[in-house]
Length: 140
Image (cartoon, helix red, strand yellow):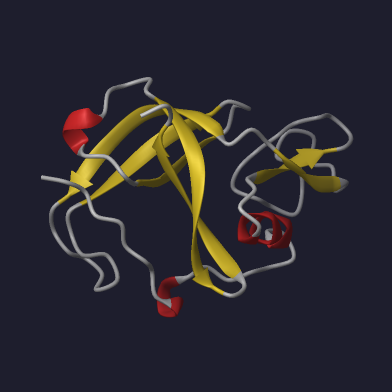
C-alpha cells in the first residue's frame, strides 16, 4: 500500500522561536541548516539556544548536505490527527553530519525501504513562513 504525502495544517505547526528561526529561514528556501557551535564545532538537532556539548551560546546555522540514511521506520495505519490521513511513513534518520531525527518518508512505499537506504531532504511548503522537512529515497 503506497504511503501518501500529507500537508500539515497551520494548527499543528511548531512555533518559530529565536532558537529555531535559522532552521525555518533556511527550510523556507529548501535548504537544510543545523545549529553549529562556534566554540567547539558541535552540530545538533533539534535547534536550541545553546550548545548541548559545551553549553556555549555562540551558535550559528549552517547549511548541511541534506543527505541521510534510513535507520528505522514505521507505517502509520491509524489516523491520530486529521491533518495526517494514513497510511504514511514515519522514519528515524541519521543525517550525514551526525544528528538523528524523526521525519516523514515521501515518494516511497514501505516495501521499497530498507535499513541504511540513502535519503535526501525535501521540503514541503506549509505556510508562507514555513516549509516542512521530509525525506525521500535518494537515487530512486
